[in-house]
Length: 85
Image (cartoon, rainbow, N blue to C red; front, top):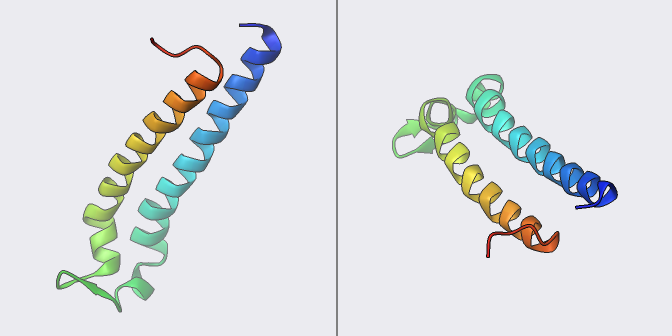
């Protein structure tokens, strides 16, 4: 890959990482700690939503974000023609 193309590829990869990790941070720290009191007014499966996010929700979101990252990176690899054929 040429340097310019390599820089574009890396910048797009970093953008994906920043966005996905920001979503995870918001779900784990924001919903589980900062906004837990407000979210506890809502029940999910009999448990307050803030409690659910701090105990299980952030893990589910993290696993989902892993699959999203794999999908995005496979698409990016195909776009820059560095995918496994």
